[in-house]
Amino acid sequence: MEEIFKIYEEQGISGRLLRDIARFRKEYPVPEQLKNRVLRPEIGFYGKEIFEMAATALLKGENILLSGTKATGKNVLAENLAWVFGRPTYNISFNINTDSTSLIGTDTFRNNEVCLRTGPVYDCAVHGGFGIFDEINMAKNDAVSVLHATLDYRRTIDVPGYDRIELHDATRFIGTMNYGYAGTKELNEALVSRFMVIDMPPVEEETLLSILMTMFPKAKEKGMRQLTGLYMDLQTKASHNEISTKPLDLRGLSGAIRTIEGGLSPKLAIRMGIVNKSFDIFERELIEDIVETRIPEEWDSTELF
Image 1 (tube, rainbow, N blue to C red):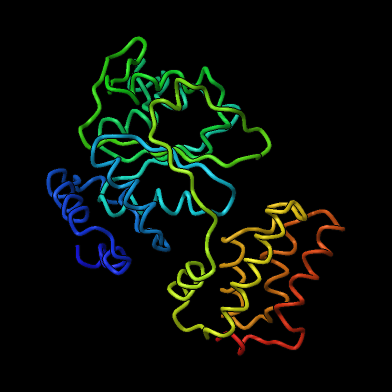
Image 2 (cartoon, rainbow, N blue to C red):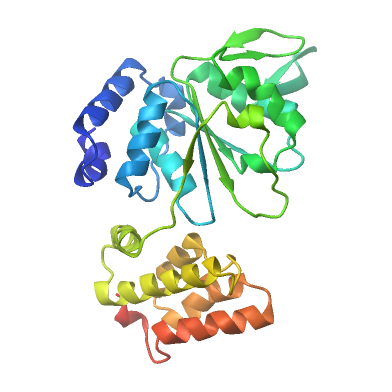
């Protein structure tokens, strides 16, 4: 327990809030068969104000919606909240083909009879999990409309042809949405009203450096500062619409660092993890120019490890 809360204590998160979360964990223990769904995130979340807003809302029984541009840590926060609350996680990735049956369940044939093959929202509701609705603004309105009774004060799910179930007291839902992705749309007002909304700010340089140094404790700070600066340069260019957000990829950056740790030259690693994420030749040249200002041609892996 102390290890789980350590990162938040170091950020100065309210002691009262952490004690309330600890009581929540004690009040709602996870059954043995679901412990494999209590997933430890790869990295911790850094952001005192955002974390306190989200955690307090969840403690009071609210669902939350995390909105913002790409690479602001929405999924990292969602995963960390599920972990610190000690809840089994159910990830639901929305797309234009998502319908009510993929959320709640559909008929199947088992043991010579028709029965319900439950979906992730149904399982989350029954087992007191944290359901993460990834890219919720990509789904059609008729798909998410089935969730209205689930997300508001009724906290129920009507399964056509089967039962009406009530949500476990510990069940919460966390939605995430990016601005401007292809296939996204404006969320239905009725759906938004069922969430507390948190607008995620862009990652700051010192925060990103802390994250990377935590992920790669053997790395040299001087070299990691250059990579952090590179990411911030790309973030600035993207915010000014000089480049797209495609190379603004934290997963790509961390993947590049792993290959550098394995002995690959920083230039080649960054090319795979960031530069080549853009498939437009002109934009790729712009990104390479930005990289050259931060990563010297002669660098090898010993500059970082």
